[in-house]
Image 1 (cartoon, helix red, strand yellow):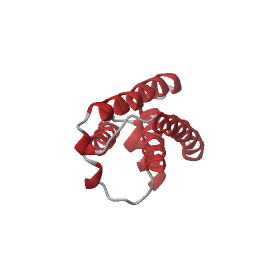
Image 2 (cartoon, rainbow, N blue to C red):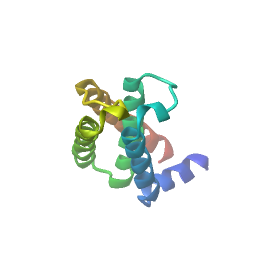
Image 3 (cartoon, one colour):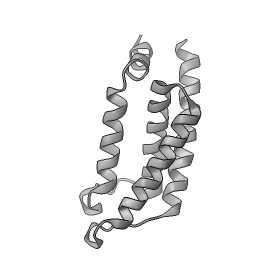
Image 4 (cartoon, rainbow, N blue to C red):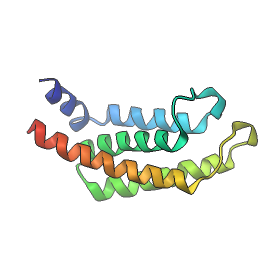
Length: 119
């Protein structure tokens, strides 16, 4: 029952997925001192984009569109971080983009398994 409700949260409406995307974008654009130092940067990117990959695939149901869209989003984040003031302690990092892309595909794998379990 819980899995079915979780499935419907992502599958039927984009509201939660859009909310997650906005929260992750905000976290990527605020000064790094304001973010709790819970894990390293690459792990945070990986987990964030795994969540986005899962949630956007559950809504759009199209691997190609989600992969392309989130890949552009990952590059966009890094470009914006490059343009932020030095005081934000943010920088462009290709390894962040790689972690994002790996996260996207792990999110797809989790969505695939999740859909098999729920259906």
